[in-house]
Image (cartoon, rainbow, N blue to C red; front, side, top):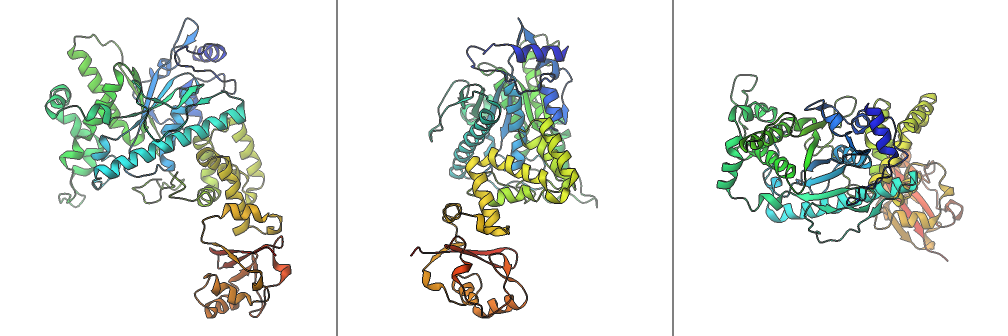
Length: 507
C-alpha cells in the first residue's frame, strides 16, 4: 500500500500550485519519507506508528502535503554537525513534497533547554542572543542553498533559490528559502512568544499542563533526583528551565494552528519529552474547544543523537563541537575531521550526514573494505560533508591544504592555488628571493616556526624538522633554488602539526 502511494506520488507531475514543489526521479521509488529516514539511520522513535501513513497519504492521485518542523537552539553563534540531523531529515521529507519549517528559538533561547544537560546554561544577554539568531539564519541559507546546489548538480534537480539578504523577510507562514523545487521556511518563535503576557500564557497554556507529567520528563528527573550517595543535588533545576517544556509545547501548538498547519515535529532523542508535551497540549486545547479527537492530533519523530561508535556525543555540551561556520573551524580542519573518521563510524556517517544515494554508499563501502588503509570511505565522507556544508570551493581549498601540509607530491601544486588557499592564514609568509642560500634552521626561526635557531637545531637533530615534508638531515643545509616547488615556494614543518609555507617573490 505505502509502496504504491509513494510510487504514484513520485510519478505525479503535480507541482502543488501554491507551493511550487516538484518530485525528483533520483528518490528511491519504493520508499515513503519514514522509510527514507530509516534507511539513512535518521529515525529512532515515533510517538505513533500512524505517522508513516500520515506522511504518505494521497488524495486525488497526489500526495497530501504536510508541514514538519524542527527547532534550532541559538545558544551559540554557529551550529555544529550535531544540528545537521534534523535539518537533513527536513530536507529528505521536503523532497517528497512536504513543507519543512526550521524554528530558530529567538524566544526560548533566552531560557535554555535543560534536556541532556547536568547544569544550567549560562544566560545570554539580548544583544548576544539576537546576534546568534542572525548568524544561524545566515547559516541556514548557506546550508540549504549548498544542499540545493548539490542536488541540482548531482541529480539534475531544478531547485530555485531565494537569495539571502541580511534583513529578515517577514512572511505570514515563514521566510521561504526557495522559490521553487523545495518548500523549506524559517520561523522565529519570538514572533509569538514576545507579544504574549504571562497572564495569557498561564491561562491558555499553563492550565492544560499537569505538574506530575512535567516532573516525569527525563530532562527534569535527571536534574531533580537525589544524587547516588543520597545527598541532594547542589545544581538542581531552576523554575526557568522547568518551564522550558511548556514554551516548546506552546511552539508546537502555535505551529499546529493556522496559518502553519504543522502536524509533525522532529527532534533529537533527548527531545521526546518536549515533543510529547506539545502533542498533549494540542490535544487538551482541542478537547477544551469541544472537538472530538478520534486520532492523534499531531506526531513526533526523534532522531538518534550523533555519536561515535564509542558513544562520544557531538556538541557544545560535550566540548567537541564540529562547527559549521568557517569563522569557528577552517575548511581544512572541517575536512580533516571527517577524513579521520574511524572505520566503525564511516558507513553510518555516510548514510546519516550525506545526500549520497544508499546504493552509492554501499558501493563506496564495498570498495573501502577491499583495502581499508586507503581510507576510500573517509575521503568520500570528507568530500561530501565539506561540499554540503561549505560548498564546492571549500573542497578544493581543503584538498590543496591537505596536500601542502600532509602530502608527499608537493611538486604537483600550483603556487596560485596555494596562495589562494592560505590567504589570511599566518602560516603563509612571503619572503624575498635573497633567502636562497640561507640556512634552513635560520629560516625556521625567522618564520617563527620555531622560537629560536637553537630550537630548530634540536628539532633537526631529533628528526623533527622537515623541508617539503622530507626530514632534514643536515643542520647546516642552505636553501637551494632546486628546493623551490614550482620555483616559488617551500613548506617547512616542525614535528607533526606546525607548518610554514614560504612563498618567494618573483624575480
